[in-house]
Length: 59
Image (cartoon, rainbow, N blue to C red; front, top):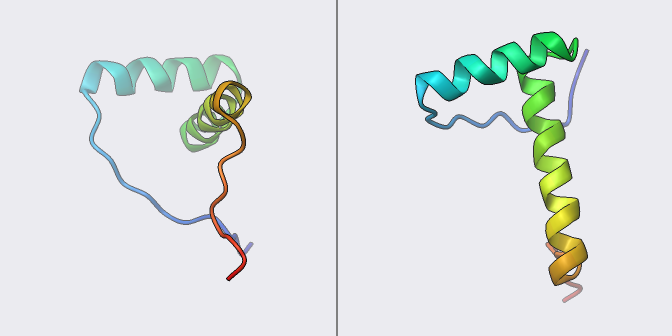
């Protein structure tokens, strides 16, 4: 199935990675889905405090 999600690679300490895998399994999620979920939560929290992040402005 096609997706509009962009692949992204980053470095993470092994311990954190294994703990994230554990949490994902406990929540019946894929690791990728868990990381996306956490990013969304952090963005929502950040925007509540600092205002909406505007990525593209009309030219």
